[in-house]
Every structure is written in structure tokens, then in C-alpha cells.
Image (cartoon, rainbow, N blue to C red):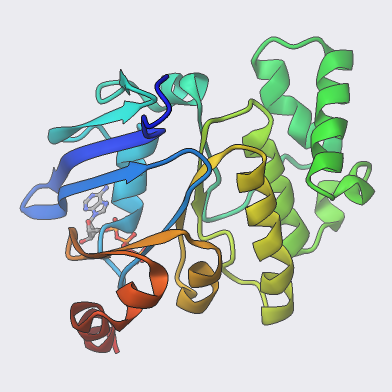
Length: 241
Ligand SMILES: Nc1ncnc2c1ncn2[C@@H]1O[C@H](COP(=O)(O)OP(=O)(O)OP(=O)(O)O)[C@@H](O)[C@H]1O
């Protein structure tokens, strides 16, 4: 991998559902250890774009490369194997298990031995500053804790790229203030992050760059301060209300 090669390169991807163009020619480059926040009004195509990156959808047109490898036609299980981790909007930890067991699951699926998986999961929780939750049953976690455990689980297999789908949704402002440094900590471990968020002020705080989608198209991209003042962005959000 060359020094300047982006972790993720998406070239003009398009996805249609019947007559609806959910994503229409969107491109993006994500550099190592960069956080890009994706915002946009309801139905803008954010989730569809994520699905094109994670492999849930195969684009009708365009291409997706991870560290220079063409993964455009690869399904989601293979993309997970080559280094894409993701969280889901609705957090569903495995029930009847402790936090550390939850984080062990993806490692065991990947063939690790139980004792090795246990060590690695504990190490990861400590690294992320949530070791105090190690033996907590998942049912006893607060939403904010569950979100962090979900991120830990997505990181267990050492992805190069992490997709965070509304990781701040449903959290109160105190909890948001606690989860944001956590996201930065993940980035500082060497992971590139794409995150979809509805809370614009929060995503601005952690994003190195932001991309704004509206009706399947990129209407603005760049540093957060500039992007949110862009007249087209203001218009798109006003139109929503
Ligand atoms: N599986 C699907 N089948 C048909 N239409 C779909 C499908 N997925 C998305 N769409 C359509 O594509 C468009 C973009 O939807 P998408 O969910 O990607 O937007 P979004 O920005 O994530 O919205 P929200 O913020 O409400 O989650 C919408 O018009 C939606 O109805």
C-alpha cells in the first residue's frame, strides 16, 4: 500500500430501486485515520450509500476499492473479511452473554481459539476504556454502553474501515459527550471511519470532513464549518422541516 493510497475509494456509485435512484453517482475518498461524517435529510440516500460500501448492495454503476483492491462485486461477508466493519442503526447485542463474550463472537467465527479470543476481547475492551463492562451481561447495559460495545464488537476483527450507522441516535447530550471521544479513540487506533448521523452538531465535532447527501447526490463536501454554511445544505435541511 502506497503512503497516499486512500483506505476507501468510491467512484461514482449509483443504485436504483425501480424508478427511484437512491444513490446517483456518489464518489468519496477516505484516507487512513480520517473520519468522514455523512449527513443529509431523510431519504437522502445515506443508508443506501453505506450499504454500497458494506456490500449489502452491489452498485448498478461505479466502483468501490478498499486499499486499492476492487471490491465492487464482493458481498458483505467477504468485505467484512477484507477489512470493513460496521455497526447497525438498531443495536442488537447477543443476549444471555456478557460483554466480553459478545466481543468474542466475531473472533470465534473467524476461527480463533477460545482462550485467544478471550484475551483479545479483553485487551480490546481495555484499549477502548470500557474494561469495567467486561463481565456485565448485555441485558444490563445502558443504551450508551451498548453502543460502545457494538463498536468494540465491530472492531474485534481489526477492520481497516469502520462504518458507524447512527451511533449517537437515542443518546442524551451527556451520553453524546461521552461517546464522541470514544469514536476519536477508535480512529486513533488506526481505523478510518465513515459515520452517518442525524445530530449535525455532534458529527461536526468528530469529523475531519463531511459529505452532505440530498436526493442521492452529494451537494457539499469538505471541512465541517464550511459545509454546514453552504446555501444548498441550509436549503436541503430547511426543506425538510
Ligand atoms: N431496499 C429498498 N427498496 C426500495 N427503495 C429503497 C430501498 N432502500 C432505499 N430505498 C429508497 O431510496 C431512497 C434513499 O433511502 P435511504 O434509506 O438510503 O436514505 P437515508 O438518507 O438513509 O434516509 P433516513 O435518514 O431516513 O434513514 C429513499 O427514497 C428510499 O425509499
